[in-house]
Length: 450
Image (cartoon, rainbow, N blue to C red; front, side, top):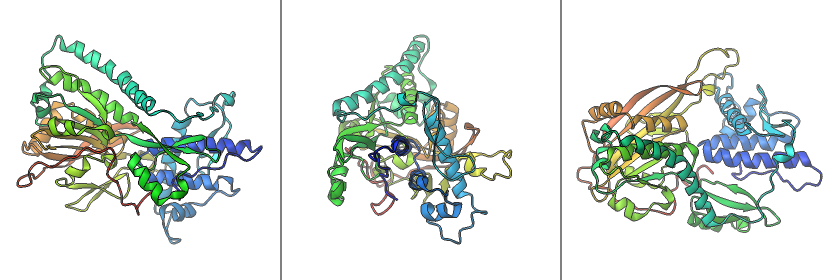
């Protein structure tokens, strides 16, 4: 399945085709940036390809084309296709919230993509693409404004509260103590995506594209060397995007750090792609990102960690037991149409870790497979009781990691269970060497997912 699938928009008089292509392009960019699951993008691409067919594809056809199953696959016993279809439908419905005019929909009980009528004034929705790609400085200025808007409000409130309060008791926990007492303020490193500009046949910018194999300008150069036909279509404009849950997590952690330090200092927030070597070598770094996208920090932590990302964005594997933990939506758990009222749980997994840096500093990781796991870990590291319990489970080790199961009901977090907590062995290894990069390490081999 091609990773940058788009229906042609230049067919004369074919307004419907153009609308489908425009909506599909916008939704696909959002899906790649927020869903964390390549399989959802592949499923959407397949439905988009089949949208012009009069006959909707059957469940077994989807299982074979998208999931690589054989003709013997029993769809009555395995709800994989139905579950992913429900997740994709939910993402599409959320994307359409508040929009006017025709919109893409997946009808309930069907496996096809349609252009459904919406409210009037659809012309207000159609915004022509920019005549020129955004400048480098403008892209990062927009990122800085996003952080300023979300972070300063939190900081102002909590700093005001500090006038009448002492240091937060969080500074006493094994997780936060290195940050609280270090002479330098930590850096909060947030995971960001690299986007390239794709131009159409006329050379004008058409859309922004996120490809897992292209996470920097250097990666783009390597990609174009292997795909010379794309040389005139893909362009580097140094555009990066921080997912909303990651930015929200950073905004929540920022005032906590200020309240636990004696100087009440406010840390800097920086995208992982812009993290400096000095920040890694000299101070504490707090990484906030999805597990499959940790990128740069995975280089040192893989020397000690007992977990690795699996071949799917929605999975994490425990090396010792070989067990794979898979995030599942509530719809995937309860996709049996014959029992629609049966309650179902969704499952996500959160990950936290702390390990020594190259100069006696500390590297902290706050992560999750999907949104629920990430947001729950942000709250967990804000709770002294939870951190004290974790410290007891890891015997007060300075280097440790933990995996939590997060259960959701109706989109809300229902409960959290600690599955694995263990010290990380650093004896005889010395502190890991951490290198700042301008791009992420590849998440998967180049022969893997696109």
